[in-house]
Length: 139
Image (cartoon, rainbow, N blue to C red; front, side):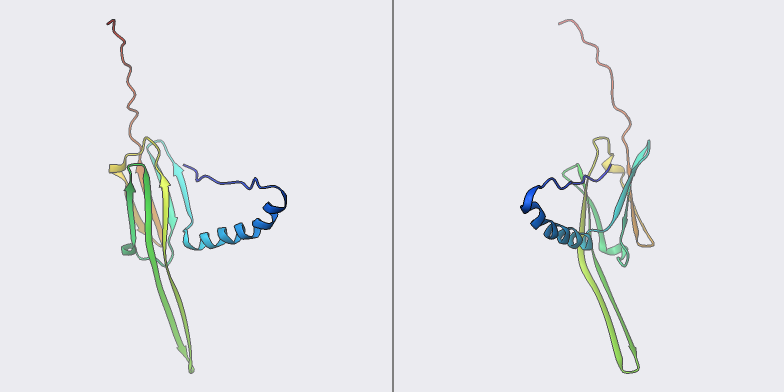
């Protein structure tokens, strides 16, 4: 279950002019889209999503339309320190959302989510092969 990538196929001066804008857009998107990795095994798919500073209660996972797994949430972090008349405050707030296309053999009723040490792990079981041979009879 690899995430699709898009290569730059623009040519000429317009492609060169737009490249810095595209790069800035990718950097901005990476600030709001948590890093993830996906894997597959014989019995299940797994997705690990890095969510440092996010609390478990601020994460929602749902299947939309029967074929898309959506993870969304909000990071709310405030740190403040006071020393010798100086105050330092650091705020990190923001919402995020990631969507993953589920393979046809994903068992959506068996999806399990665990959250530990800032990593959300999703386990999506694979349905057993439901192929069967059908005998063609004379009509």
